[in-house]
Amino acid sequence: MPSISGSFSGRITQGSGMALFDQSDHALALAEVVGTQSSPDPLWNNSNITYWAINDLINKQGTQTGYYNNVHADGGRDFGTFEGKVSTVGDITTVEGTFTITGGDGKYRGITGGGNFKIVATSETEIEATWTGAYELAKAQAG
Image (cartoon, rainbow, N blue to C red; front, top):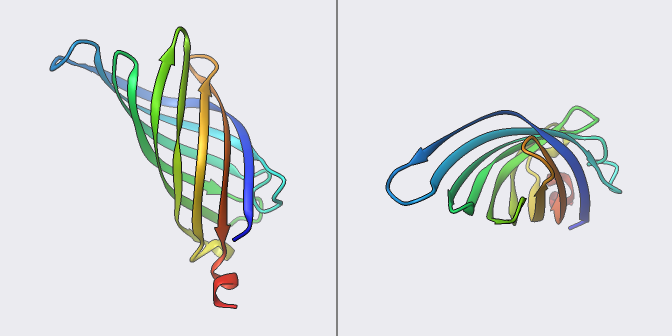
């Protein structure tokens, strides 16, 4: 499996949240984030990612789960799921976790792989993300 790495700056384009009253300072939030990938791998460089995250937080700590869609410069796409741990220290919120590639289309049909990511919120609407992992295209798997 080829190794991949990359980063992107993203912005929240939609979001909503609600306070829950089962525990003190419990909140659920949903957000859509968009950005353009930067990667040494030409298949991932300049791809446009959109992800949808669900945060379940108590005292600004908790979990994030969601889905992503990555449209590559060649028009194909890969998509998948992710999960991570959210932590907030002072005004800095980070999410660290794993992603799994669950499918794709175009040359990415049948792709497998996954890896690790880290997201740092730089403001209420901006994030910086880094990731590493590995993937295998179905054509390479068949060969």
